[in-house]
Length: 207
Image (tube, rainbow, N blue to C red):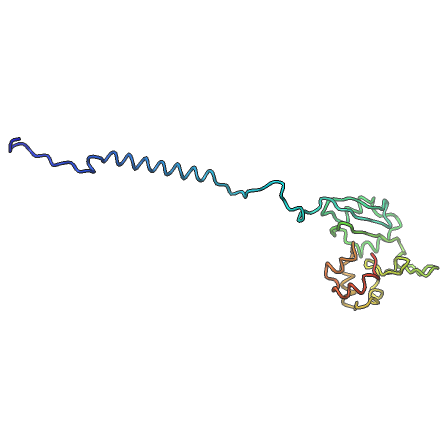
């Protein structure tokens, strides 16, 4: 090589492998992007559900059984959907008869109230709540509605409720305000009375 020939400097590593490195970096980028997309598509926001192992204890019954008696066209026990109202029960029973005490119904019965499984509803006839004692001394005046002279929590007067042990004026008004009741146990479950008072009076009560 002559002195006049221009000397070419040696090429660096980057210059030699520049395009290979660029292509490698692009390939790595696309591979990582594909892996991220694949991971995301395999995830789900829905919880994993296992069939056949649901707890039956928390399930609400789809149907309830309720008894309706008294001054209705078709008294008896009816099966209704859970969540039904007193008005639904009255409709199934054919509505009130001509002898029904509509004044009592209007003042006392909450037709929008929810029905309870195993509950009972009694519709009195006209004059039944305020009629005098019968010849066999069975009082049907408001509270007394059975041969055992039990106090009716649905129709007793304040004076009659006040005769119950442990029940004063305040509790009497709470009982009246909470009507109608489908079970006597509602006095306790709805905290109308306390446990001790309930134990004293439950044997003297009826619907």
